[in-house]
Length: 135
Image (tube, rainbow, N blue to C red; front, side):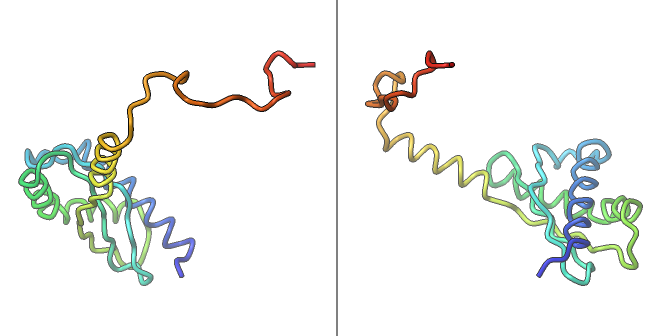
């Protein structure tokens, strides 16, 4: 069971980490990163930050390495934002959800027939559902 406090902390960590990646980090390895979501343990000692990285596998590994090396700096930013007894230790994990959804969309595009226009659909509105019947 996730408490409201843990969910609020996870959202605050997501905001701080994503803004710090965009504005404060100067590591050339870190490019094309999106923080998708954050999981915080119940005791608030560990935060698992899921990131999506654009690019091929080598670029993803390189970016993840850069993020892991800057985890201490990002943890310091988080400690200034949230007021807890312990600052969560930040761990980065690659989120493949976005890439998987793009791959599935491509597969579906290859399998399903292409629709050129709405007229190709065999859809008729139900009777009495005209837009002209506005009384």
